[in-house]
Image 1: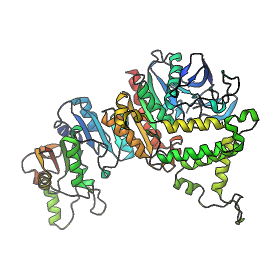
Image 2 (image 1 turned 90 degrees about the vertical axis):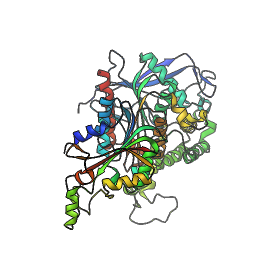
Image 3 (image 1 turned 180 degrees about the vertical axis):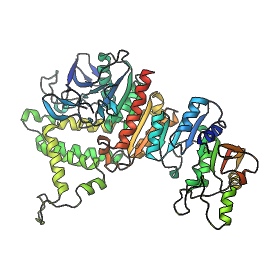
Length: 377
Length: 194
């Protein structure tokens, strides 16, 4: 497989305000993004990749000065990979409210001269899609070959087909859902309470105090991480393995490997992720519900979509279970849209969408190859 | 036996421009044929990973589902034609599946191995379960858990209020209209709800 050259992040500044679903506006903002591959002369080979909760615009490749910082979907996207950047021009935008460079809670609020903190306006999936559309406008891309995303990114891909139905020919919606279940929202709420009740949260204005609500963010991540894994994969990876040979009969010390793993993941996450961003993104997840304006009828909501779809789910994903993907498929069938659906029997739970499973990648590769063939037709 | 010839014969039963659902669509070859030659649009349902991939490669709409779990994805009368070729005999709930087929489609087309084909009868007369080109499995490892005959299907169709529009046998890629219950290895029925 050819080694791609190093990639680099770019930024775009927008002086024109972005109206948000909440009624607030983002007055002045910057969006980080990355692109891979080359936009063809017809500007018809662009694929927008939407990122999920804790990811950024760095979706593929490595930076020249950070050879270990590999893009989060690098196993799927790159030269010769299932989404082949030798054929497609791939764009990924860091959403506003995030903490990877696009305007977010840690940036200065032009109205106050202080960091937004918890005053950063609540953003929705629809708002993100609008922001991404502005990046595409500037890049001169009127119609995408495809929009693609996993999990929360899949929600954005789905929303794209409803907000800008004529701006893409295909949508790939992977390990996603048409809205969160009560159980999903419950997990998000526990995570948010962990953050908000951390004494270092300071009502969301912790930047001024020179602290971060590390404990809350750590617990939030630990909870999230449990929901990304399947019972089986956790059992296979950790089981009841102890850290030491003997029990220490302590309620505070780490006894089991799974505890050690979760604490490690939590600590790692809390070192780079912003607490206000976590609150914002989990709320965007909670709010996403395109059927809400259609009395809960997803088929009516999806009647606007014109794209052809590939929907993928994973059998052991209990956070966004196959049942939820089938709801999307059913709504598309009701509207007589073109859709293929792969239900991959992978053991890894929700995380499977980020992993390299040959059946999953095979289907995505085949689907993308057909999109590429259409471009040359 | 020419798989291709059999497929062409089946495709000819599908009116042009139909909205089709192919249950157990395999690698999507029939769907692609119906799309390219008869201007049909529709979906295939398939469980096997490799076949789902082959269908996606062909550019047909494939939905990876287990037919044993029913057709709840599909609304009543949502297809002109529902095909179920060489699949019915693999399903535990054959009768329910037939009813589902009739529910979602205006016309149903099914094919299945005819257990009453004369070489099968001979083998049973000799005291052994048949092993043939169409039924190549031993009794203990066969996926064909429902073995029926051409004549049996007429009775099942009648019981379920289905009107037979056409019925014939297939053997070695040829249509068998004379004594198909005896002379054909495969039974084909085209029916609608009464």
